[in-house]
Length: 251
Image 1 (cartoon, rainbow, N blue to C red):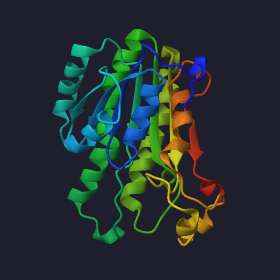
Image 2 (cartoon, one colour):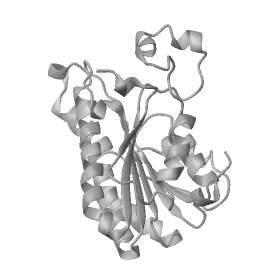
Image 3 (cartoon, rainbow, N blue to C red):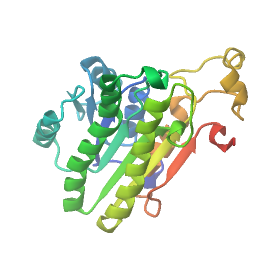
């Protein structure tokens, strides 16, 4: 996609954390095409490789950070600093999905989904923010589901992780604004990884409930992602911006 001069991320370094789903490659491509160098952190090797293999150039690298590997976050940053100087951008795509009736969820399952979607993004943010504060510059974007602010049957465990990350977004925006760090969230609705014919999509009840009568695709959010990661994004912070086909406008 064409990049306006104000949205150019040339000479910026971004950490992209992906906890689940198929959107990581498109998010990485958007940041890379805008000029950023990427350090991809994912919870397994295929997830990291899927993003890296979709990128051009040699300025990108990655690290596998499995569930409960909190002690390895500092190791990841050590590896990061061997290649890159600054953390300019952090993108947490923390939408590892989980659906189960509330009374059937085990403590281990709850801990795992919170590890992926809350605790690791929180701790990665701590590491990134320490470096951003020293540089007096930073952009953080947390990608969450509309379930951060809505309820869904069988969605209690997942939705609480999304609400937690949205709350973190707002809290960091208030705390870090004085350090020239902007923290925002992109809220996503019902998405596919690739285009699916509209007539097939509209067989689903939730698609018919969505005002735009289709599911989203990663390309629907990538222009906004680049904006929120850029220097142009200077007076927006603490905001969840929903790209959901109007789904969140419903009562």
